[in-house]
Image 1: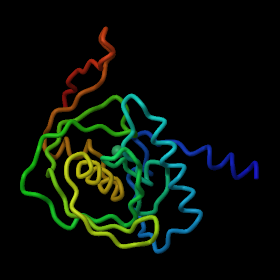
Image 2: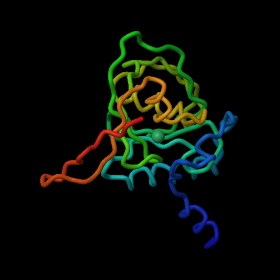
Image 3: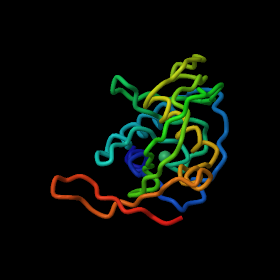
Image 4: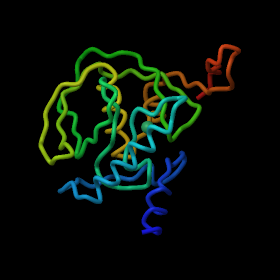
Length: 182
Ligand SMILES: [Zn+2]
């Protein structure tokens, strides 16, 4: 059992650039016990990120290639989403300040739809269709991008948005940013 424990605890977030972050993922046919364990480890790992807070983690970010991610919900709990799809986007968009655990210390300004209608399979294998708004909609879009090898940096470039790097903390402990020329 020691070996298994070592393998599980060695899960870590891959940092860009890394080809695995660009991988295309494969649909999940069944949520096996092994996959449930992986989800548990991913949630545990995400919660270790406090500043900035980890609110979502995709399979590709831990070197796996299944189509799933975990994300924090409005109620504070974490949930797994398998074979997630965005069925429709709201017309209304909002400028988001977006970061990624795989691209530490960088933040980009990106326009994203404020609401999405999505489908996915939950941990019990049920097919769910729902409309997400606010932070949940934002995280869902970011994580779905990961599952096709897309990073927020790509969107910053596409939209010619602003990119910032954290260069330190001020006396109050808040991040100090510097614009990065693209
Ligand atoms: Zn990310």
